[in-house]
Amino acid sequence: MSARGEIVPIASSLEERVASVDWARVSQDLDAHGCAVVERLLTGAECGGLAALYARDELFRSRVVMARHGFGRGEYKYFAPPLPALIASLRTSIYPRLVPVANRWSAAMGLEVQYPEEHARFVERCHAAGQVQPTPLLLRYGEGDYNCLHQDLYGEHVFPLQVAILLSEPERDFAGGELVMTEQRPRMQSRPMVVPLRQGDAAVFAVRHRPVQGTRGVYRVSMRHGVSRVRSGHRHTVGIIFHDAT
Image (cartoon, rainbow, N blue to C red; front, side, top):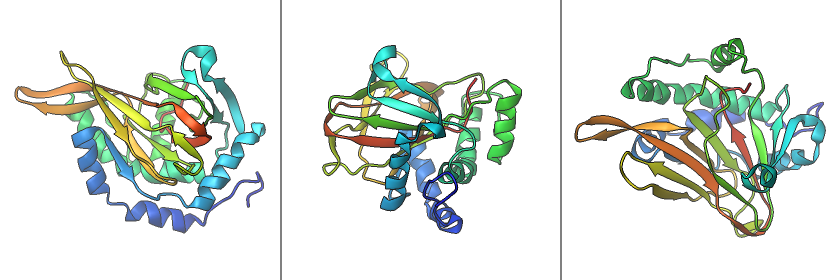
């Protein structure tokens, strides 16, 4: 237990879990669908420890009640710096595994931006542009709550991939509340996707756009994500966003 009262895993254990992920398969799934699932990235104890942090307001910089802004129903809180050790470790250890996909997508879509290999260097880029607020967050849903389809954009600099980890167990802690995504291709109707997750599973998905190979070359599709209505119980999720906010 840390001085901030949070559960801190053995660093090598988490790093070994991240290193053992089949990132080639994740890359293939991201190219094909804009989303990939990493099973059991966090343990049940880590999930419970993170969910319990929601009650500790001193750990957060802001709280958002979705209904007040037309975002849906439910609420979430953005962590204040310094980030909890587990969140910080996830952010720095996952980011470099996603950089090859991010740079390949950027080139395929004809964008000039390239992402550095280390997360600290990308954060420096964000801070130089005035994006200095950390964006990892905890989300809490109760019965009847949902999250409208959206994109997590917080400024000029956007890392094209993010991670959501389910901290609650479906059918035990809650029912409903599926992670949903839509893909909007040019001159076509949106394609819906439901991403099945269990406690500790991580979904890696596109923040805003991804490239798709068509018959006339590569074109850009727009991605959005949300959460369907929770029918009963309570659902907690942690979001790992790699760019900071203004």
